[in-house]
Length: 166
Image (cartoon, rainbow, N blue to C red; front, top):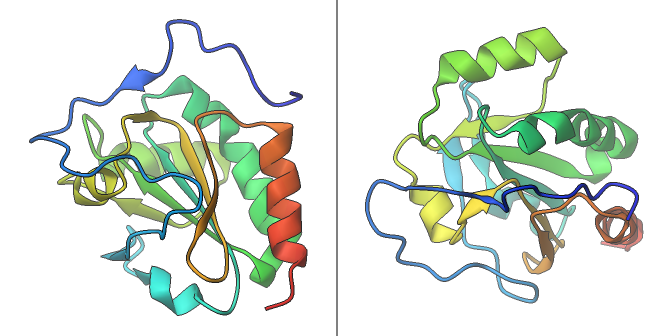
């Protein structure tokens, strides 16, 4: 596992405002719909990618050191696959701010699309209980990979999804 790093102290648990009402979304589950505004004001609608291209969805936070450490990988994936892959991040919004995101993006020269989940609604809908959480969603809206780790399997699945005919 070239990318996996030991998670000392395990995954960071998210103390969401309100109870998590959805079970974690897993492999072979239909990805719940997301319609939201990104922090740059652009709309994001997950259904717009159905039938066209896979989606790499990452839940993260600026205070999560693993999340921040992995952002260059996500940026590289976005550049490598271009318009054959939609890359979308969801900042879990817990104990974070848009100002923190903008500062991190400026410092690290990132331009990955990000939704700020201020109320934790998207995070709860997906049943996310720790960050980072990586999901690869195929062209049909089905989750094909789910993990808290950046692994060789993620890379292989990502390459296979992008290579599939639409």
